[in-house]
Image 1 (spheres, one colour):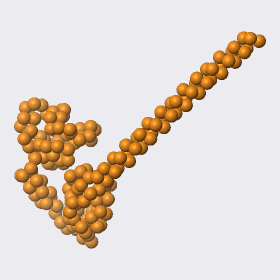
Image 2 (cartoon, helix red, strand yellow):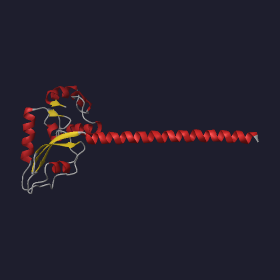
Image 3 (cartoon, helix red, strand yellow):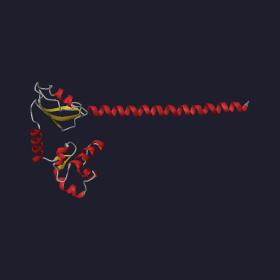
Image 4 (cartoon, one colour):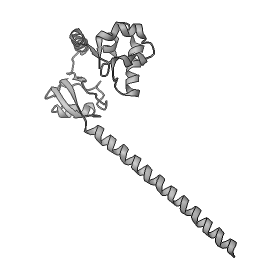
Length: 187
């Protein structure tokens, strides 16, 4: 009879320990989930500035929440002009701080506008490696299409560059290439 009582007591202790451990794990999962939700909400509350131009009602610099998309920018710019051509615009694309969005007019050849804007922006300023497009990155000495794409992929995977030296983490950009471009880039 004593053995049965001891077995019951030991079983109850083990069950109690298991129950306590499960409860602790659930509490930690809830705590981690709440932290993740708070981080997402904080990120959504961060504001970015972008420049929207072309066939919108109110072109100019606007502020949006980080994580916004082109459709949100168009809405903040008063909507599309009647002559807007959005056939080649990805309205669902996420936008980044400092980005320029151009909405073309129907019948407009935007290749001249895009080339002109890139040339103007690079004639007087450095290429921001955190926001530059592939085409803008290719304007840097020794940076071709594949290296420019690697820079963009690195940025997407690791977040924004913290300093210009971090670009040396890109396969194909060693010390020699960095020395050639360091005066032409910024973050």
